[in-house]
Image (cartoon, rainbow, N blue to C red; front, side, top):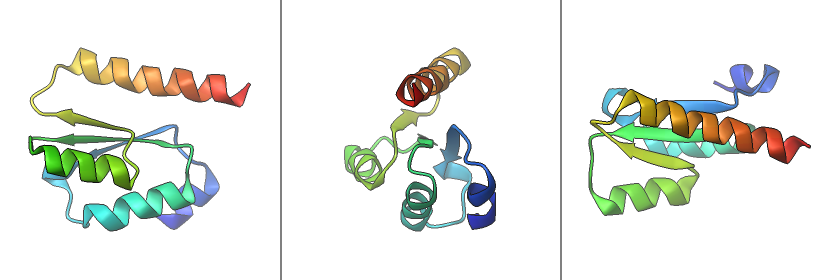
Length: 89
């Protein structure tokens, strides 16, 4: 992952916790360390408030519970991209 983020950091990374085998804690910390301006959006069917709060405190920028509407996901991604471009000005 380090070489990917070293060359060019993506604007947004989507992480579906229901389909990831890497422990989320190490993933979040590594992504935020290597690309602090990259938005990290978590997708998961886990509805526990404790889990959402922990991931947001670890560096996730948003947490979207499944099931969700694709339009909502796209709107959130566009929102992060828009804010990133505003910060660059």
